[in-house]
Length: 143
Image (cartoon, rainbow, N blue to C red; front, side, top):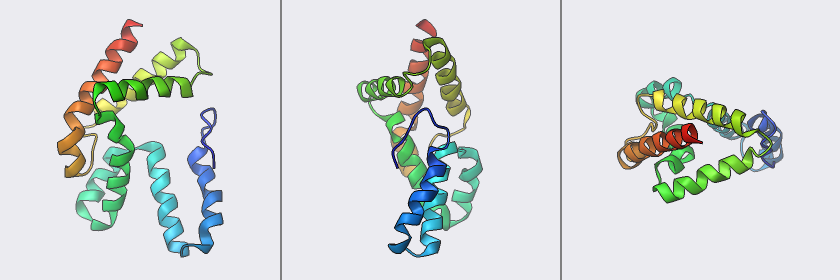
């Protein structure tokens, strides 16, 4: 599968890919992998945070979601490169629409009590991630 930024069903398309790898894994494993991939589509942090804390079976999901968001907690220079890459990914979107949409996504992330589900990522990346997101919002407002 190749990620296509103009599509809204990239994660759903992985269902097709999971059928291809069925011969490598048991059906239950493929279903679990598919579920994990679908979690990255929505990043419903609040939805999963209680389950992660209550049940050990969600720990791999928590680490996957945290790894997926780990770029947010990188140094500003790395984050800035990432944010430019995101803009390139959405080059088909007008500047005004991109600014509005990107700020909405970033503000939604900031609204969560925590960005990271695991103590490991929270302790290492939470403060820098919030700082980076706030800085990007400031830059988007100024542009």
